[in-house]
Image (cartoon, rainbow, N blue to C red; front, side, top):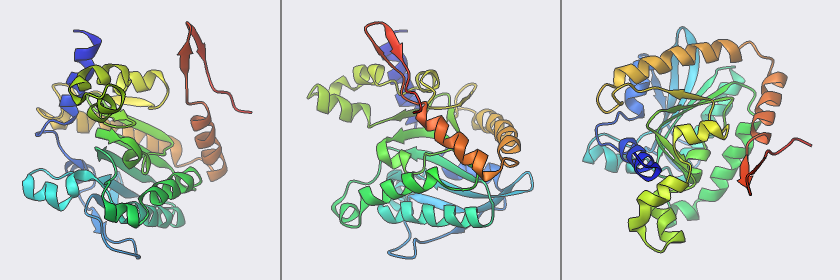
Length: 277
């Protein structure tokens, strides 16, 4: 199969209508999950589900982008596209997690932040930037899981983490392949080719050290979600065991260095890596 077909197949699998949403992952990992609501400023954004739960007797804060499973749910959750109040709700609960020393799990599944006029008027860009800044300095472990789609700033706003997992058939990119093709080629029908050069698959991003661990799906989450979810459970337990004992100074230093080392690119056959100064 060509690179074009491989990348585009991944895009289609990430968007498969039978692929489980974040609510399924939360139910399996946190049966005692309690949802919390609101940003204490404007309202409650249903595109982000946030709350508390225990995993292997460890209290955790869970922040998840939820798309919904049927038409009514998709409308209720705005197709997983958060407004600024959703990101502010997420940060409110992350600050609470820091106060009570709870690890944070962020589940990414969005085509992007909502681009509507109301969202822009209420400070969409500022809310995303605020989260990026504050997540870098959050004094508690942050674990990120890219479940299906990781689109642009909508994903990055809850995507800063000490360990980043990505399901085998998920995607993570600056925007959708259709948007990329429309901008670069002035033709959205070239989305399949755009996907092949965007480096949006889990394998691509692992190569560039953007993600740390790829979670295998077996037949695929749309066919047998239990296989992938159980694999993630095992990896999550291992990661928590490593991160929780770390002093926050060590945790933040590791997080800073992790992001400083990102950004490998190739030019004229030579590979260059960003270096800390």
